[in-house]
Length: 417
Ligand SMILES: [Zn+2]
Image (tube, rainbow, N blue to C red; front, side, top):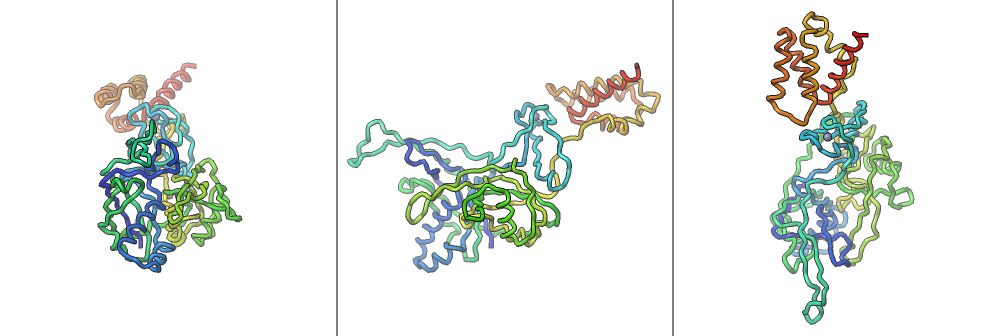
């Protein structure tokens, strides 16, 4: 069974990232599955006392994913977006190239269709909470402050809601409405959260036996055939085959690979684990030959430490969901403008249409009034049977109108020669 675990933080929390020896300690803003699992284990011991039951549940059954702030968004490594966001609508220029690869649709844009600026990848989580820094003075054994030693630590403010997923065959009633303690500073009542558990409906996606884009929602520690952590896509393919049981192939897109170092602590010995190189959250894969059954088996993740929530995958999709507007080419205008050009009225409003295209492609001033004014100037001179077509043309994107303005000018030059 798969469950959603919601954590409502009553006090600020701080989850160290392995740099506790420094004067300033930062905090993770996505809570690792291992940290969360440790917190749940501590809670479990407060209600039960059987070492056998504990081992049965925690050693190989209870899978706990990382906890992510409600509302945070993960951008895949194959997604490109407008680098500068110069225009208000630049935010719409977000395209996942993995969907183009999966669907076989051509990808040929390097520019933001709104502002003409470059498109770049900005993978990873966004909309994470900003941490708050709190200082404290290091106390000596006699409880007096050590000279000049001010320590500080980052906290995520109270009131945050975090969401994780749990997969287990066991009953979870001990966890519902329980108080969980997460991260450092428990003696100061830091990291106190109320847990709620709801069963997730495992509705399988409407499956299509076609190339599919998937992505990691948590880091994946993949190993080579000798068992060492690997960032090789051949090793990812072998792991996807092994877990899914499908005879699949992975399209090789090394440009989508991002790595991160995964650290952690051995809960019982309180010693740091050897850091492992992992594929980062958001890394995209396009896979041929994955079946619905294979996908169900992949839901428990890939690679090492899956029980700590590493290697979790999600489906990006099969089809392109957002594509840049098409280029207005001479061929396009040849076909789309044929009726207009054939009619004797064309000469009456052609230059007005070109002016409207130029005016509306200038995005330094955008208003409904400006759009209507430019449209009216053209429609006043054009026969009514062409009004719908002209409305459609002038509703094109600014970049397309600029391209059309260029075509209208060059046509004129051609005729003069
Ligand atoms: Zn832009």
